[in-house]
Image (cartoon, rainbow, N blue to C red; front, side, top):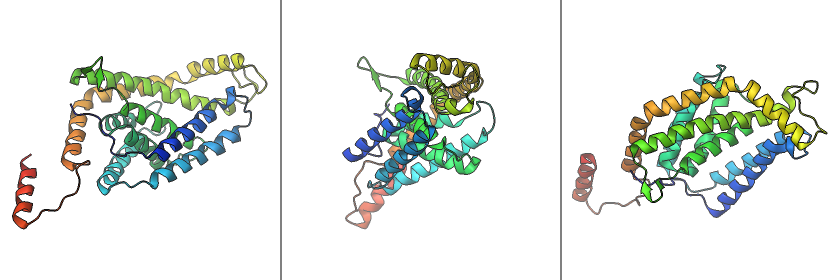
Length: 277
């Protein structure tokens, strides 16, 4: 097993932008419990923070191979999400996001998450105030997959252990995504006249109790199928997909410096050696 790399190596300024934008995103998700009663605060600040983060990432020097790989995986992930558009909990995109982030690292996973959700909005017509929150959630899930440990207690995680780890992370991320989406949906979804509605002047404990009740009463029909499909796809596809992605990582030589052969014979010998690998 190879060590998880970071194809996109964020600069210090990008890391700071990621932390600040994630903080703003967290404030947007938690705004009902922070005394921020106006939903427009979250709907405006979260997209602005995300746009500034994307602008900062775009200013980095990223090589063509990494951009091409990101484009292919973004298109595949967005297409997988569109397959389940409108179906309860049928979202097969998450397994590919998790496996790709596992191989290519947390920075790549974060960018793949936000770009895939953005592209899928074009495919499904899913534009709305919720899109920035979906992109943040997918980015965090991708980053988390890239941060999963390679070793436990000093021992390298072998294939079977890695598969179990990814299955559990798939289940965890499926429920986490549903929880986060309910956080931004609940305050304005039910109106103000139900027993589970958000209370603008209610206490933190009362609103939290209402939210938890609403979440488990309404979202399990989405979260359980999402967790089942994601974990099943990881279990079935992980060995083949991980091998393919890791082979791509090795053959593309993302971290190898570009060197020009001194003469024609050396160039031919190098090409033959690459073909034999």
